[in-house]
Length: 257
View 1 (tube, rainbow, N blue to C red):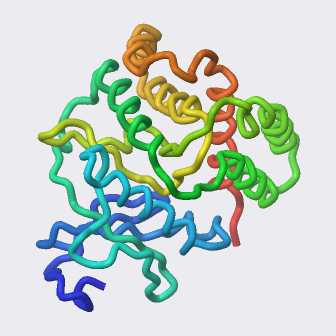
View 2: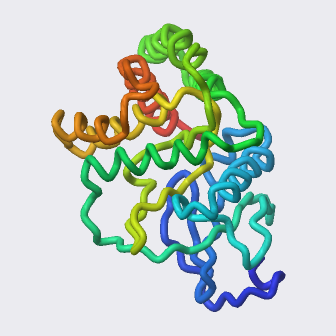
């Protein structure tokens, strides 16, 4: 892709591998984000990735996110059955300590303030529930699977069909999706952008902080820095993130041919 568009690429260096593979097209400041495991979970990968690029382009001038590449078309592109998008490589400190609570809360609040003005159409957060239901449908019937389905159904009215105000969301907020740069924290991984209550993202950040062993005092400081708009009661949203994690882990651990 790089060579087709006249972008020098002497070395394709893998910098991350999980549900997606990230490849730095050195020496160009371009990162290819290649769908791997997640490609199997979406009926229309092109439309899915096009939303991510649209939101990234909208936020590009804010400095809050790693923007799509301007050295070649950001995509989505398909090559040899692999879907990918192209992003700007943002120099960052991989050895930096984790952000403190106040910085985390303020960074997410700034991201939400910018996202509130996004004019495009996004899938509703209920799409996450639908996606989780599809994953559950791929699992062998078992009491644990039935319990997860009941928990998901119980959370639908308060989380996935919430009456709270909705806006554009990051969709997959975690400390692992932040980069420490010279200009501050920069968000990455907009693949799960959607529209819903800001509490979905806030609960994701709280879940991520707790998973890293942060204290109740840390969480309180994070929420204070974010502010109280739309996050009066996070409990059902935290429960929904716990179900999300349990379903994804069960799906990844399933027996495969």
